[in-house]
Image (cartoon, rainbow, N blue to C red; front, side, top):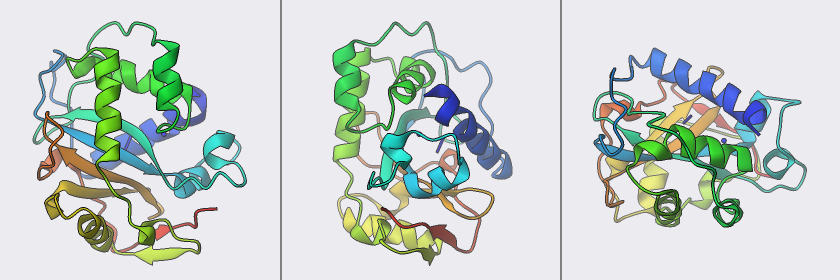
Length: 221
């Protein structure tokens, strides 16, 4: 949830903050020790609706004509069971260019890769190489069904999105999936809950859930 720093991070951070505020979530104070968290949340941002939220402030790789971007990796976030997990757990060393190049297959921009390492990766207790290997493994383990990358606009209940994601990933418990949405009820993120070993698990209440009765999925072009 919450995909250059100015292009994406500010609007996404505001959206994520608003989502947690609405859902009564808060970060547990004092939790900034690497490895001190309960589970991971793989956050997959839905690019068409994200791009519609920030016109004029878009990365062409994600939002440009013919990008064909559907769900893209926003991050792999350490979470606490009932509250947001730790963030910014220490000095983030510059990333090796080879890591950035490899992760551009998953993230839409270098700035987001660097931001996610600083904000969330430093709290994982892993090296940068191991953290991004975990991101890759986590994302590769999830199948996105074709019904969630539509060629025309759809409206769908959040529970139905969860159901379609669960059906496409039968080895995951259905409760491993959650949905977040923007204030205008467009789809923001698909969230997938994983143990520290990246095996699927039910989400804690910290994963949140879109409260809307239906959300809009703009088409993937």
